[in-house]
Picture (cartoon, rainbow, N blue to C red):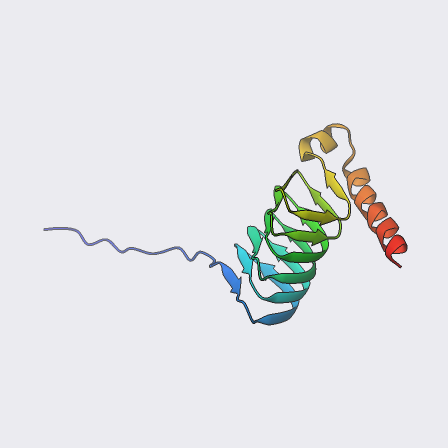
Length: 145
């Protein structure tokens, strides 16, 4: 006689999609991955990867583990890992990441601060790291205004 075992599935967060033709405004806190093929205005905090598709249009302050831009992103980015701007992607704004990849044809209009966390911490520079991005943001806003 076989023993019956009770299988319990752990609930895992699902990926989130903002599809083409959808417009969302507000604040998103995403526990997994996010793909934007529509438009979004507001703030995004994501524990996974954010993908902005070719039709995606984002105006936001964004924080995520990794970010891939194939559409248009306007705003500030703080990326814990790798920021990738594909050949069809445009970033208008400042970014802070550990790694940045800009494919041929990709556009970055703004400043980029790329520094490994361990390097910043070794120098005791974590506060300066953030202050430098804020300073660059202020300079960009004054030049634009």
